[in-house]
Image (cartoon, rainbow over all chains, first blue to last red; front, side, top):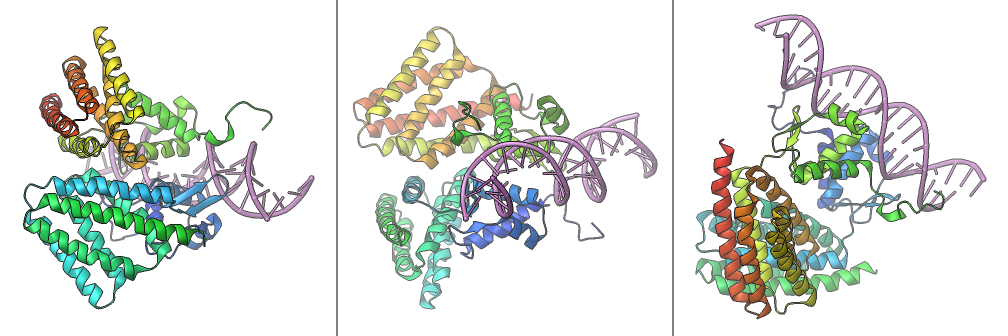
Length: 225
Length: 225
DNA sequence: GCATATTTGTCCGTATGTATA
DNA sequence: CTATACATACGGACAAATATG
């Protein structure tokens, strides 16, 4: 390495992780669709890296459940099954409801994060930026989980949402599903602001259960097509 | 492959995972103590494997938070900090309490698993097998978490307990802490059997909070010695 | 502070076995 | 059966960072 900018030691990143980052991005933005086969040769020559390094990147993403490793069939972008989808919502119910239930007092940071997420979603909806509605909704629920204040739980949920994005990209009907988020989230925010945590938990749980049903139905139909 | 009984095709395991298993065992049984540096050369020659393979095993264990990786410094057995310890108990509170709270009816499998764990712990305690008391206690709480029925949550909790074992090995005072488990667990079992889930949740939460306090205090003292 | 040895990070080429077209 | 593509594992090379005398 010549007289480079020299990264300050700490945040140096391995090649494998950089490659994993590139692929992760392509998957999360939907450029690489579930089921797509990733050819070793194509990527190694395309990125100018060795097979060994690529395999390490693959391993990282398989651990994040973004890629699937079928035995001698190579690596493919993960296809989330119906069982997985149900489990993902089960995890959301357990964690998010627990977060709301455990609140004693809404912290300032939580309040602003929730508030901003709701406003952003409304703005985005007005202008028809449905993808932005989705990310704002994500931030809203991340803020809810963040109220627990547990790094480990935050990390688990990041993975859950990464998996759910795979589902959303298969559905590609952002509008109908994302519009519901807005009203539910602002209702939740109101309940949290007035301190009615019990009712907030109920609303959240009901919403998550019905969202699960909706997605399971839509996903089941989309899958066998 | 000829008519081999050997591995039945599907559950073939990679060398990296086998090596990871060996190291995991050494860590979980306390033979490799937190802070120990793992030399690549030593292990590759000791186990007769290549560096690449070992590094893959390292990667797996780093992912499980049993090993720590500092760039250009290699890997060491993870040292759990006080913040981590508190977070681990926070995760237990959220998940385990949610599991108890969410029960509508105790399933047969859950009942037998809980019952057996309590009996095993009592037997082991009578004979002074404190390590076995610990594993029986672990099985009890795994059974509680299992009531949720979520593979992802089960996996998360397996990791949580693996991290907690690192703490317990630093403390090495099994008796005083494990004796409490027995009475609390059998009380919990009774409450679950009579269907008083609300009270069971309270007992569990109280226990976990007090256990956290106890361990944090003991760990803080053990650390700066 | 300096020179040297050791360790780690990265990447490559290859060998063997297996599954698929 | 052959050719192809992939999985796995090994050993080696070389640069960069670190430890050591």
